[in-house]
Image 1 (tube, one colour):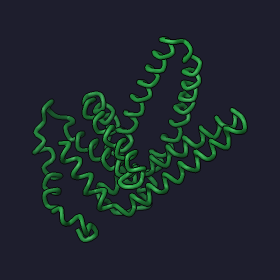
Image 2 (cartoon, one colour):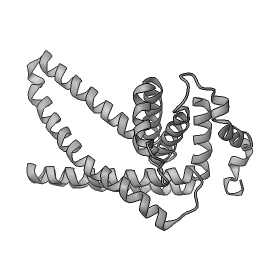
Image 3 (cartoon, rainbow, N blue to C red):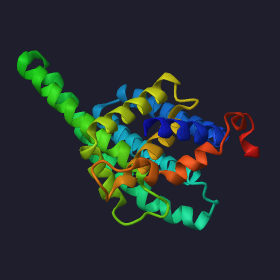
Length: 244
């Protein structure tokens, strides 16, 4: 299963090399602007820093949400439909931006709290550990749920994606770790952030094929179409993806 996900993600990323690279540059440029604004606000006052942090987090969250929707369309080989794209973006981008506001505020409060408790010895360490674990859990859920959102979103997809995280915790942790390492170790360029989103998209959607189904499904049957598609793609075709 994981081998199929990695192979399909490699092919999808290579086929979309130019748009993915452009998207990565856009996200990195936006992140650089946000960091620069934060540094400038930090030299001013705490209130301005909080406002800039909230606005920057919301902007980045909305950008990543839009990027995830575009990646979903690319992976599914959909034709570009501006009307359908706008219809898919609004229900995904706006909730991402709104969700980033309280989460960023909570993160800033946690940082302040941990700083105050750091002198408390064991109590401070325990508080920091609990907060870190909670943050990782929320981030993992969001990271796996967001790319599962589809342009033509079938009913219950978000709920099934959330259940998948808890029902397949080891698989979810492994995929999230690989995606995070992929984005960080490549400095966000290639495959970078876009490649990580492609991997998360494929890993989530292919795994969701088991629901509803048996505890130990027959993967060769459930993924027959994907396996057949990948087997028809010779490795040498990767050299000229635009002709494939």
